[in-house]
Image 1 (cartoon, rainbow, N blue to C red):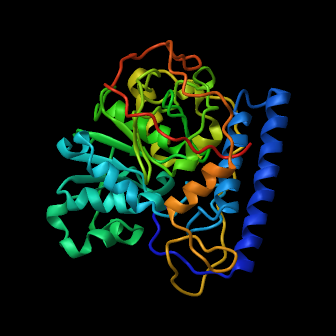
Image 2: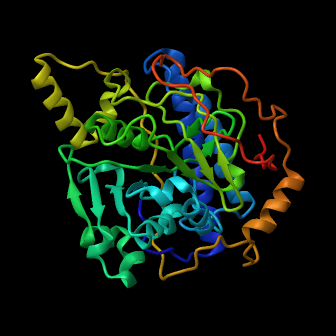
Length: 379
């Protein structure tokens, strides 16, 4: 959710919460694997949870994580996340955009503020789509000194204008959150709740964007992976076109097709039952079609992140075992020296596939960036 401030907590408390999060993670992974094996839920991506766990564990163990911590079951915040906003601001696609959709998670707080400072209309999803769809923030209606506050949960309530599925809007860029991204094909993993895919699908149904609308993800360098294969992704999975980290911008070849809307046959009854706007949308489409829409297999919903209530405000950077704070660059050098990649390289040859998706385009976005150093979390 949108972070209004970071809470300070003792190292003892942080470690306890981290262990509790890891225990919940292990229990969920076991439940997903057992459900898949029994055939009660279909393929719900047990393999994805192993990658998420690897990333979350690595960020915590190497003090890359930033508040709110622990980062398990979250879009992980990280040290120097604000530098990704500078990478976004330098993109020609961003400079020409008028309407930008940005996810409401902590590491993208500065990205949201950058959108407003650049005079662009900002679209922010309601957290977990609990109370509605999107909020629209118009920089012309917000005092400049309030831009940063306007990007918090309280600020969106105060300055945002709620919009619904009937709104006539045109989104020029989508900035999407991720836990891991494969730069070879643009395949990404979120935190496992599917909200980014649902938000994207609803915007496509509205006609607010198309295949050519650039999708950008802002992550730490350690979240770059090479083991998200194209053939294991499903129709609703959203690939990214551009990756912005604190140290680099990566343009991804357009190998994977993008979703065209909501794939009701993939949407579980549990997920549908938790999102009111989706229930309303499905009921409306069923009335118009005069017949029921399909429903997906059951799903074991993942646990949400938990944390103790803090007693005050703290800094943004992760707190180390002895109270030290590592910068992103020094941590990167340390990670590159210790962590070995999987040896799969940057193979980008051939045409990618995406599960049972058959539609979509396969085109290059242009010349690739110069060769870059990769930082892979350990298995």
